Image 1 (tube, rainbow, N blue to C red):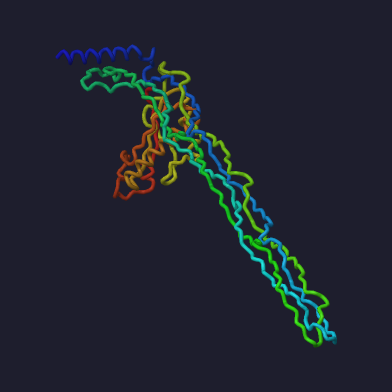
Image 2 (cartoon, rainbow, N blue to C red):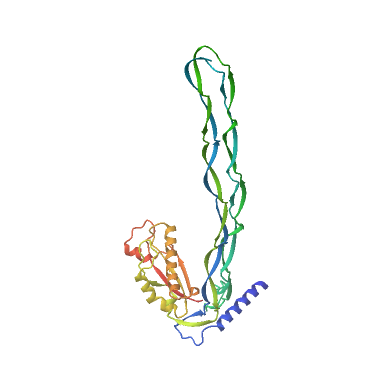
Length: 411
């Protein structure tokens, strides 16, 4: 019982508060709506870093050049050639053949020698360890918390005939809106690891003189006979023939410039997020006289194209003429869009919501504050005639259901 009395007292207090806030000196037969000074917002662009700057390392390999070198592969040497003795016959009785000697060649011998040389010098190479990243995110407030006044429905047990009795106003909060942006942050920057690249050697064979050729003398005893005598006029001898040295051309790889690295700076990446910032807070309310017909749903005679939610130039002209002047007085309106029964319920619901949104977005683009606008789509749920699914109707009858309306409401 005490709880019931408390509820009645609360309702009476709310009704009394509302009654005291009614328009001063209202005129009979006229309609009034409560207008709230809207919050004034502005859009600001916030730049968010989505990927941190980092360094990228570019490596350049070692540079080489090929050189040729003339090397001795066989030393110069000599060869002995025997020049035989020259004889002459004489018709005398003498020693037929004098004692003499002959030379026997002892040939020289050759050997081989292995010569080693650096075919490729030692160097190093660089291996790039690329930068690694880790995921992150930043949460940005794009619309701060606010609040809006709402009037309750009339209490079911209210006995007053005054529609403003048994009601109360609530200042309901609207939570802030946030957006979370994914980020990629640098974990470990790029770097290099150096490893040794060993050179290598090659060798070639060189023929050398191990022992030079020589001669030895063999004695030939004289022969005597009373015959024709062959007399040696020129003794045997040797002559030296030069054998030139032999050469070959070899190639070897010489390091010109060792491997090196170059650091390239990769700049950070950013994205822009638009957030709403409160410039001036509204909330002050006043009463405004309006045409009573505007408190009921009024037709906006927009001819939507089939299955389209795009405003044509003619539709924008109708909104500019019929609805924009009403909103510029500061009142709030509810925009409702309906479809006929053709098509699925789901597609019709979606189409009606997109059409209502198209009207509200156009009004916002014309400078109307979003707090003055409410858009609703009802699809085919509120037909004005018999043309439901399965009923054959004319195009004119279907057009009656395919409508967009507006009405003035309290803020």
